[in-house]
Amino acid sequence: MKVAFRNISMTFGNVKVLEDINLDVREGELICLLGPSGCGKSTLLNIVGGFIAPAEGEVTIDGERVTGPDPRRIFVFQERGVFPWLTVEQNIGFGLFRQTDKEKAERIAYYIQLVGLLGFEKSYPRELSGGMKQRLEVARALAVNPDVLYLDEPFGALDSITRLQMRRELLRIWEAEKKTILFVTHDIEESVQLADRVVVLSARPGRVRRIVEIDIPHPRDLSDPRYIKLRDVIFGEIGLAHQV
Amino acid sequence: MRRFLPLTGIAVFVAVWQLAVVSSPGTLVPTPWQSLRAIVELGEKGLLVRYIVASLFRVTWGYLAALAIAVPLGVLLGLWRRGEHALNPILQLLRPISPLAWIPMAILWFGVGDVSAMFLIFLASVLPLTLATMHAVHNIEGVHLAAGRNFGLTGPELVRSVIVPAILPQLIVGMRLTAGIAWLVVVAAEMIAVNSGLGFLIVDARNAGNRYDLVVAGMILIGVIGVVLDLLMRRLERLPGVRWGYVTE
Image 1 (tube, one colour):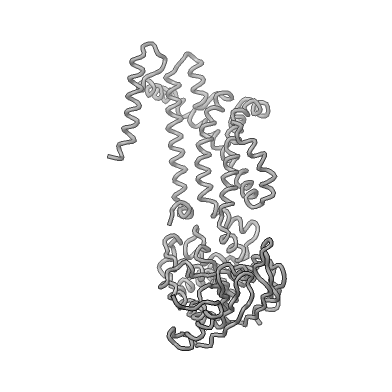
Image 2 (cartoon, each protein chain N blue to C red):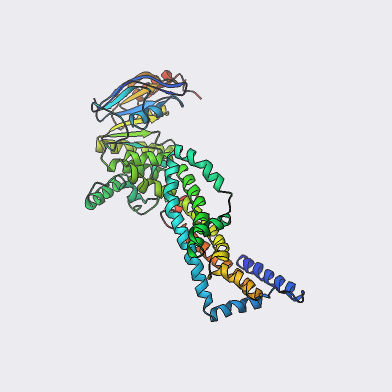
């Protein structure tokens, strides 16, 4: 078991945001944490990331208790997380202060190419589009070779076409790099397109309502009856009829 | 056309000045031309460069000393809320006290001379710079600090790699405004404590025979140098690593 959530509860003041979350994540798995706004899914990700301590319970990774942020597991924020004062290559190299110059340069070059930012090495984030900034942040995270990636609604601020492309990119990178990924989203379609398993959380306080296994191989056909079936199961679970 | 408007403004001002002086017989106020002549006279006596350098010297050292104290202090208070709460009342209390009110204290502690003048510059600069740094630290995006910590940075490394670059754009604006204050104060400081500099020139010219042309010459020089200092500070805002702080996307 890679990541284990044990009886996680969280309160802010008198408000209970998470209640008794239990979840086991396998190595190399892509898990989507899905829930309505305010259900505490981002809080949950921040707890795994070590940025907030839970009120009760604990998270272990490889059997080791999480007590703070750790460079072996990198958190990817929405695109705002890139450092605006650094160029693309400086951003990617940010976490590589323990490597030799040569190794650093090689990794930067490799990840620039992997996320498709060739030719933008010397650009600043303000000169990039939203999707490019998001890819840059993913590259910065991958460059330190973490074994887990946390993505907090990473594509939420992008337009719908870019979002589709970014999902495809993420799957490509995930297959190339074999990372364990925890992906927070409120987008049902997104979770069914990406995840091995979708963890459906209830509205506040967030509880695990159901875990849906998405047993469709990648690349997933969005008109496949199985895809539509699983999507509808989740729609039903969240209590929405998908009619407009 | 737009480029000539600023020049037009100056031309009109000079014309009004000239007219006002000419139509007031017996006035001690010099004409623009007499004032320019006074600047030339200072140059011929070798005083022009000497006084400018003297004033800039005092401003530079007082200001740099303030910067050396204010930036670390501001970062500390910006990160450490309890320290801020403890020190804030004192800072707010000291803020409305004009640096000039400290002149007697300066003379008491440092005697009459350069050090007193520099101390006054220091006092005038240290508070605004501390507050500017502190506010800039408050405005750092939480995600940037979190990302820095996530990559394993703590303490001095986090300050150097995340906090300093993150506050730089706002800090530079604070530095520019404070440099203006420092320049404003040096002139006043030189009126009491020293025997060189542009402030000294103004007081000395009046005391030594009502040379109001030299007084106005001093005023013009102070204004021009102030503008030049500001333009130089503005150039800092164009550094590639800080431009992000000024452009809106």
